[in-house]
Amino acid sequence: MINKKLSYLMLITVIGVMASCKKESLTTYDNDKTGSSIYFKQLDQSTNYRSISFGYVEPFKKDSIVNFIVTVTGKVYDHDREYKLEIADSSTMVAGVDYDLLNTRTAIKAGKIADTLRIKLHRNVKMASDSLSLYLSVKPNEHFTNNLEYREKTVAGEKVKLYYNWVKLSVDDIVGAPYFWDITKNANAKNYIGYLGSYSALKFQLCIQRFKWDVATVTKTTYMPSPTLAVAWGNNLKAYLDYMSWLNTPIYEADGVTLMKAGTFAK
Image 1 (cartoon, rainbow, N blue to C red):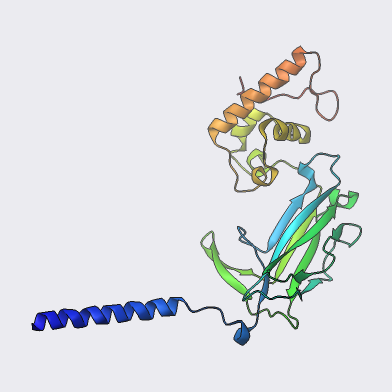
Image 2 (cartoon, rainbow, N blue to C red; image 1 turned 90 degrees about the vertical axis):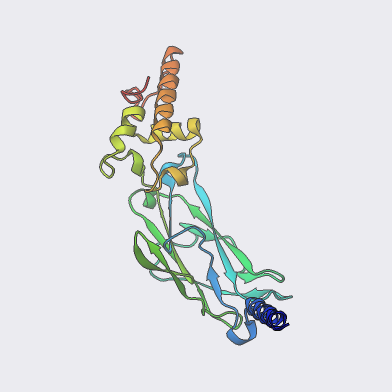
């Protein structure tokens, strides 16, 4: 009888603990006490910087649109809430010349907790020689706070602060070999040069078209194609260039004299 009572008491205790844990896990964000904090939603980035290069896109493309997601904590409201967006004086991009902000107003719409900032970049000659920058920040106002300031993230074994209330956008039109193809930065590039041949902007554009490369992916410093891909790309490139020469329509480099060639490993 005593064992039965003891078992019953233990069961009641366990149920009580589980109930208290469940209640605690349901605690929600108290918007009235702390205010609604506004911030940039940086998804898979480890820094506050985003870099765009026109150097890797076709010459006829004269502009590009970049999106930044601005989001807020707390509940939704039944009315629009305007937020304060500030462009820092240290920015070297000029509004109306290098970029346009496409949003007619900056506000979190009724029933929403996020807004998309749309920035149209204009390709111009300045970008061919230097990188231009745009610093964006969201500031507190009567609707929002900056209580959500930063979080720490471990990158390459070191802790860095990822700030939520500002971002830097860098834009250029400088053509250069991506990391995996650049022998001056990557010792393993010789393997890719063996199949693709020496880098050139025209060859890079051809590879984008033929192999459906995603420019944002292949230009990352962390991107290293597999050996299998390098062999496939090199052989395909050689076959295509040979075929075009057989048709008496050979592909030349930018000087109009040098024949475009695949690497010596390509078959």
